[in-house]
Image (cartoon, rainbow, N blue to C red; front, side, top):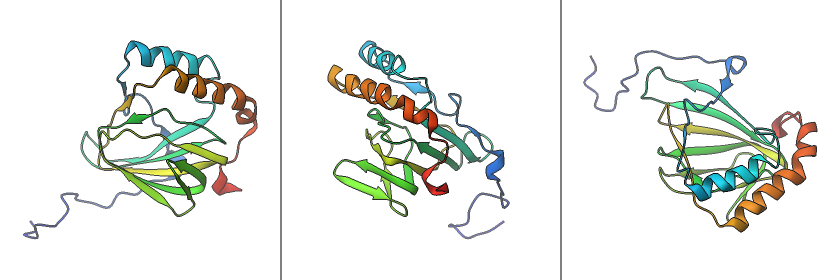
Length: 177
């Protein structure tokens, strides 16, 4: 037993392979905050394009149990707009390829950002899309969709409707180009 107070409680090295990644799934990231107005907004967006057409999220690594680290790879296709949302765990994002716009900032390959737990945020993928890695100190975390005015939901729905045809043909993420 180590007496070092900074020693990790983890007992062994863990290896993972990208080929073994699986979809993130609702069981690891349940959706919450579905008020009637949020549900109405989500319905508009869902009616605009096939669900999941503009994004792909895969769980690359998760420690066993409910506690520990997780790593998720996300690819948002060109111009994909995320609705304002929050998670119940801190998250560190690292851009692998493409670009994203968050507020007044444009982030590209090698850039990143940190979002504390329960802090609402949204971003938009650039013209070639964006790939990010999401590092969390949680194996299960929620997504809480935030209230937005009807105009914002209309913009999201129009974005999905207008881009769905091009998303159908986007098969290679920015880091593979």
